[in-house]
Length: 172
Image 1 (cartoon, helix red, strand yellow):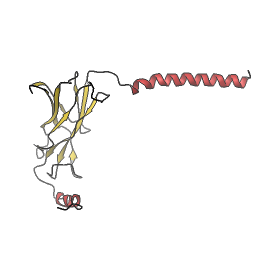
Image 2 (cartoon, helix red, strand yellow):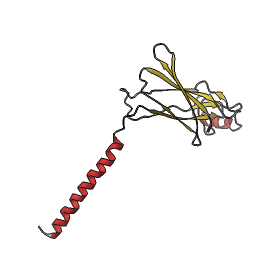
Image 3 (spheres, helix red, strand yellow):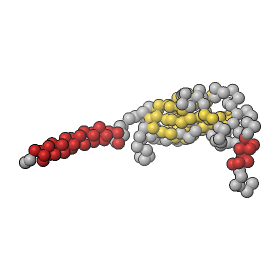
Image 4 (cartoon, helix red, strand yellow):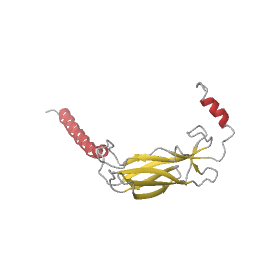
């Protein structure tokens, strides 16, 4: 065998071992690691137009207290409750231990740090979530809840114009 071919075989075998090594390192990233801890993540906003949905002038904020309540499916008796707070990224991260396949979970607003934006929006003050690994099609430990919101005490002056813009194509 010529020196060139020997060198080529040496390179291809080292590439194969590199490929196999990469597979060993990447494979665990593809297959989720079984864990009993589930992580719930979402955010809280202030509806500054008081319209019941997010607009261009809605803002997310830090310091909002959020609760997660777990109820027994048949009796509706509360079996678990924990709280978290939105951080500097305007997001809350709450860990829930164990699999709760037979329970009903809801995230809920608890307290706003903003005095003039502290009325929970009745349509956006709760969010149902599934906290189980059991046969639900979700393959990782992270659960995203819908954003929840508070209503400001008064609408901003620009909200009237903004709503006209939003409704420009409707027949109202």
